[in-house]
Length: 142
Image 1 (tube, rainbow, N blue to C red):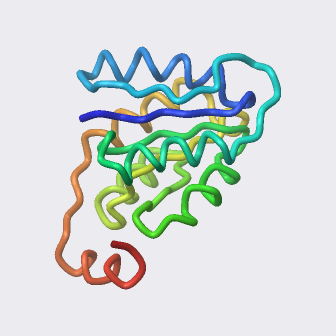
Image 2 (image 1 turned 60 degrees about the vertical axis):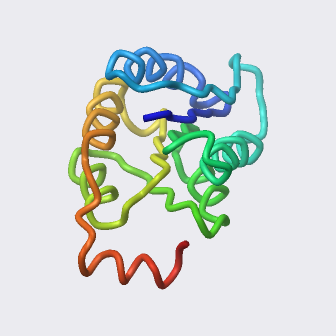
């Protein structure tokens, strides 16, 4: 899969770590920034990741900020985006299995780097189960 990944300054260090992990797992990366710890506005990076997905230049996305909340709010304003904040293995699996999330949002100041890596691994390997969940998703997403 091709994964677009973006972060603000609060998520920069974790994003850098996740770039290596995602690549090691055999996925292609589209890094939309940010590229330093200098203060930036998170909506810009959420928008860049969402555009890549909407324009079929990426299959999914990962967004990282301090809490994951701002990124999720900014990303979910797009009808074709289903962004989920995940903080453990269970929420990672359920966001894909039941909600077909196409953007994973992480809070770098909320979870540790080891937990974040496990979440990403689970999220990337979990498939959508479809069925009754598809009709629910169709009510709010394309």
